[in-house]
Image 1: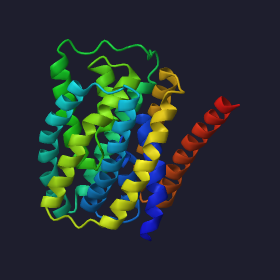
Image 2: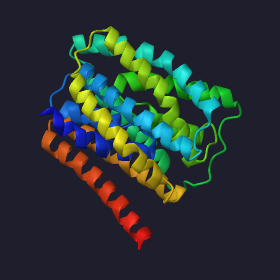
Image 3: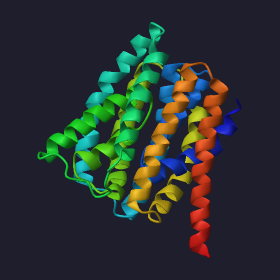
Length: 282
């Protein structure tokens, strides 16, 4: 695939990441695995994308006053520890030809769990009691997200956002902003770790993804203000469930069906944003 195809890909993923605060790697890593990239290169390339989307998304959410800086520094700082633990595990699994399967299983497990959290019957939009000890909640969120970030090539935002809501008592929009700011430290740590391991990443592809994400993330962050929290939670749950299904199809070698599902999911989401923007304009 020619490198310039990755510019629009980064742009569309940037819109999604800015809206949900999830970094974008949650889509890109499975996509790169479908396209035949090795696990370590897919993860490192996805981390490059998430660097662009997290920088842009953080700036956007700062302007919207959705970032709690103290908490984001705690989550991100502790997340560096988790990231450093995960990287050598991925490299050892890859050497034993087991990384692809392990990454896919972890992906599906986490995505299905968080989809259930958002879509389960009786879920209330204002259910934000959280843990009694706020700092324990933030530290657990950080180390878990950091580990998963370098294991799966994601920013950790798709874990941080729901955990901030369920464990730290955040309302969703503030959780999205704080999540994407926290992910910045985690992503930088993951990139440093994989670079130190001499992972062969195409820097031009990474640059195209970052540029696209920088352009797209502010659009997604701005669109978030036009939707109710209950709607965003429901759609985020559907988003997780659909990506988990795509990963399962890829594991079962239905690569074309998996790719179509990912593209269809992104298209539906973008159409939804366009329709909502058109309605507000008229």
